[in-house]
Amino acid sequence: MARKFLISRVALAVALGGGMAVAMAPVASAKEAKKSESKYSEAFIKAAGPIEKAINAATAAIPQGAGADAFPAAKASIDTALGGNGKAAIEAALPSATTPDDKMAMGQFARTYGVLSQDLAFKQKGVLLMIESGKVPAASLPATYFDAGVNAFNLKDYATAATYVKQAKDAGYQDPQNQLDLILSESYKRGGNPQAAMDMAKAEVDGAKAKGVAPSETSIRNVLQAAYTAKQLDASADYAAMLAQYYPRKDTWNISASIVRQLGSFEKSDNLDLMRLMFVTGGMKDKRDYYEYLENADPRAYPGEALKVMDQGLAKGLLTQAEIGADRTNAASRVAGDKASLAATERDAQKPGATAAQIMGAADVLLSYEQYAKVEALLQSALTKPGVDANKANLRLGMAQAMQGKVAEAQATLAKVTDKRSSIAKLWSAYAATKGKPAA
Image (cartoon, rainbow, N blue to C red; front, side, top):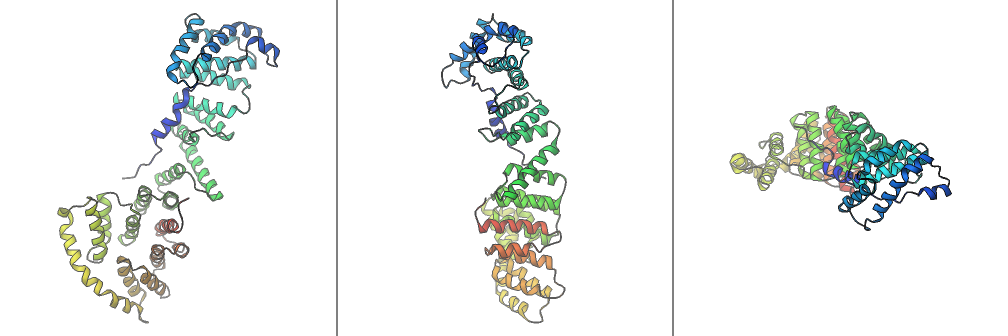
């Protein structure tokens, strides 16, 4: 089954939780407006006067630092001052707002009342009226766009949410919780525009790479998900390698290797190299992983490696003696003899007349016993022989170099793998990078 790794709904909920915050400065009074450059209509001044007075009095009475528990009393104060229903009074005054300044002030009234009454739709009406007025100060406009976008998201108006959050993003705004991109991406997805979400994530990834910095994990996962859904092995391998290199954890290695192995449908001998990577990175997470590794690393061919895998599975409680006891006993009985034959196997592979196949076979056995320096030497020799499978030899040579911490050499070698196994090579190259320096 495909791994699911969509954006955290918890993170999204936290990001959207501030949608009913209140931070309102008193609106300029009608008398002050006459002294300023603001231009209010006479009809508005008459209709808005009582509303202005009621709202400013109510918000001034809210204690500094008070939270939403203070809102009901403030709402009740406004309702009382406006004849019992503040919302109805503001709605009745809305048609009087005809000039840009009228609309800005009325938008602030509606927004504030919407916050205090916990009426998100009414709050949004106010915010949109403020934007429509064209009078929101330039420094506050990006945050106002974001406010409108978050309101729309919570109202499930995702197209509108995407429009305003994108405007906030384009204006260089970033919310205090750094969740703007998350909300924008989710708005695209839920609004039926998944391609826009993918394009956004890819642009972020490509931009970060161009700057030499780590793309966000969310963006990498989004693009990886898209490539995986489209069954694009090469692209999936690129982003899987990026995810594991920049965010090298057990879960990311499991995701990355699992996606490549699912899309690749490799032969057992090639899939074995993916399972080896999962093992060394701690990416083995369930019984199926261990069984697949053991199916690839036949205990009769690689008893030492199979024994190592079985013992780890037993230690983690993912395998039981009842399941693999007989296989473990069989593998354990072969290890001593197998190890005793290694020296002769290596010598035969080093003889001038050794064929590419003989050298590769010897290197495979030594690789199963983690004798990486010897594997490196043998495979370098094999690559000079006629008939060698250069892609396979370079893949395992790069693996041996990576396991020795030879980062540059490993990456140069792995870059030479050009057939289907190149997707496996990309992951091993990412692993080599993590051994050479801390994650970005």
